[in-house]
Length: 190
Image 1 (cartoon, rainbow, N blue to C red):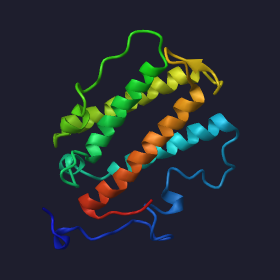
Image 2: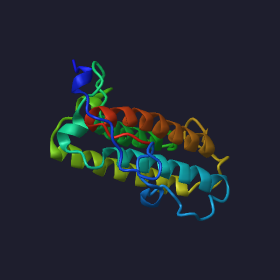
Image 3: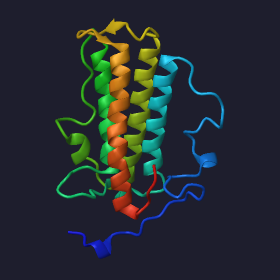
Image 4: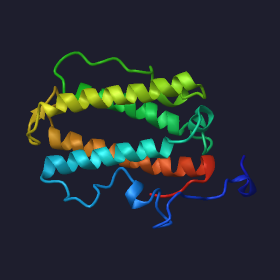
């Protein structure tokens, strides 16, 4: 069990707002002072993009051991496990919108995404590749349904409902990533 004296010192790279992850000019989630999103679909897509970027930012600069570290025992959650979990979830969401046969799980049985998150660079590389591929595949399929009220798949889920659910899932896990990253090396910020 980690003692308080073993905890890493808290730090951030931000200088403008010390409670932020990065300065506004260095934050890829900022639209550089331009106008905000136009319309509901663009707003949902931009919100999802920002949470996806946040997850990546929380993982940047860490090695395989740090990404796989389970920082809050007895939880099996780690930053690498979150990446693998979100790849699995993106794939599962594709199953929600299809009328065809479901795609197989990426990592196997329940919680295999977290249990298989081991400190090996090949596992890290595969996890990020899986996440990018699954995100792109679902984004491409959803681009065919610009009407947010359209109902698709066997369960006839509305595109709007799926988009909101995706944002919710990433937002929840970005909160976990905040805590996990702070436990790993002390870095804090939004």
